[in-house]
Amino acid sequence: MTYGGKVKSTLRASTGSRDQRVKGVASGREFIAIVTALMASGALAIDLMLPAFPDMRQEFGMSPDSTQVGWIVTAFFLGMAVGPWIYGPASDRYGRRGLLFGGMALYLASALLACVAPSWEWVIVSRFVWGLGAAAPRTLSIAMIRDRYEGNAMARLMSNIMAVFLLVPILAPGIGAGLIAIAPWRIVFWFPAVIASVLMLWATRLPETLEPERRRALTRSAFVQALKEVVGRRQTVCFTLAIAFLFGVMAAYLASSEVILSDVYGYGSWFPLFFGSIAIMLALNSLNNARLVHSVGITQLVRRMVVVAMCTSFVFLLISRLNHGHPNFWLYAISLACVIPVAQGLVPVCNTAAMIPLPHVAGTASAIISTVTTAGGALLGNIGSSAFNGTVQPLAIALMAYVLIAAVLILIGATSSKTENYLLPTTAH
Image 1 (cartoon, rainbow, N blue to C red):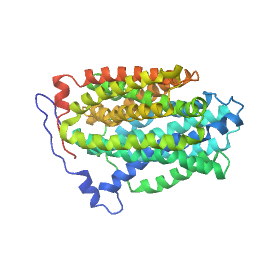
Image 2 (cartoon, rainbow, N blue to C red):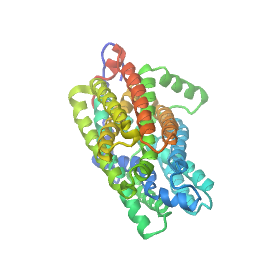
Image 3 (tube, helix red, strand yellow):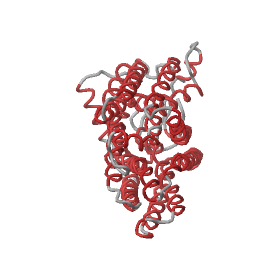
Image 4 (cartoon, rainbow, N blue to C red):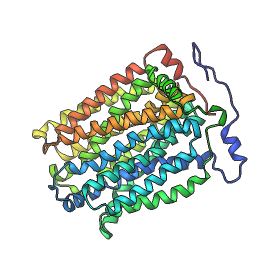
């Protein structure tokens, strides 16, 4: 593909068509299903843990309202932020498939380490390494999708994948609570290890999506050149930083929601239901975005969505100030159910917009984007959740600030004649 006053596409032979002629290789819907399941493995390793927070506090001598347990999420996110630097550039040289299996093996090994970790420090170390492993399916799945799709076609696919992906936060807390009810709390570490083993077997059907003629040398100069390609695109930089703040919204919500339900409202037993209900809203919004991007395009969609995101986060901030930071539970729940889905609905569209100009360095670009967004989101989320003071106000302030900054970045990234050219409708390879 070349870019200029107009977008021109050079049609290549369909990778999917070639795959269909190879016996035992997934293509079409099965390819998408495997990639989606691999991406969801990272979410499973987060959301399944949440109902176990009270047991973790008790076993490791923390106070009942301690936010230190949030490091279960933060350490994992930090591992996911470092991991892409291993997988991305190497996958541009050696292909996606082998590195994907290496990352999943690390995911499995670190989950087993967490099962037998003797102290809180070792649990956090295992979670960081676990995140390193989980970075492989996340980074390489996006690169594999970019190998095959582009433009609005990629945006539609990413939004649909996100909707399916969100079945994990809908189901995982309930599954985690059910597992804890019948087994010691460390079952939430054993279960993802079993799932990882199954996924590795299924993923043997994945094809290699990076054609040999498109591979790049794994040298310092090649990496520097790819890095310049990424950071030199205003569109990519703005959308990447925006995703980091949007991930900050989600990370702050993940780390704060359980303690808010327990300490502010006394509804700790409702947490799986509450969390799943928010996830349903997230999935429905992603499906709606997949429909809208087909009719209005990426640029118009993100411009409209950021306005809605700013409005909902402002309303949530106003509600958080009622009754000295203890608003009516239903007002809190409904307003939060508006903010989180809208903010997270922007992520797959922004991810697509950031990747569009960089098909020739998709692995490295995905690594850089994953690192910046995951590390930034984890740290921002930790800032937002650690400010908890017994009210919902710190969470509301953090969400409003992060959404506002993300909105400014998105509007800058989506406002230029060059960006308009990049985001014109395109087709799948």
